Length: 138
Image 1: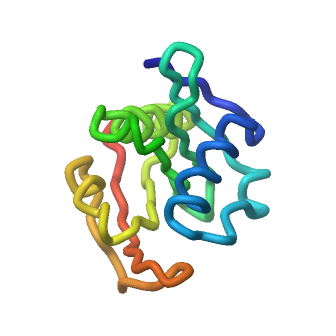
Image 2: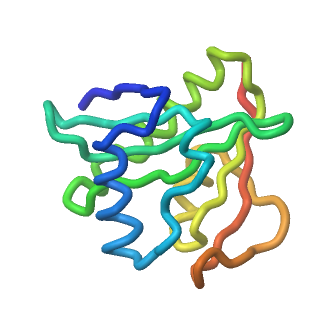
């Protein structure tokens, strides 16, 4: 598996997000203006795109979002690779606090990566989400 970081939203990331969030999970508002200001990471299995996420600066922190892995590639540590790649990029540009808006059903994945919940559980298109954060160690 290898990763590539983009400064614009690549078609490979769009295709993965459509499959995972829109077709599989039923989200309708998948793409937004934040895509234009984000960096995007895509994980490839040789030449096949299999996972993606985005990250962007927001106020005094960075946000990682739209973490998606194709169903047939789950449980192969690709989500971990995406997070670690985004964290490495954020650290390289001197970010120190990272925030995620995680679906509650997968929040234990983020906890295992060192993220802790803050604030209330809220709703995004009918799906419970929780805000989580992590401080990068230098």
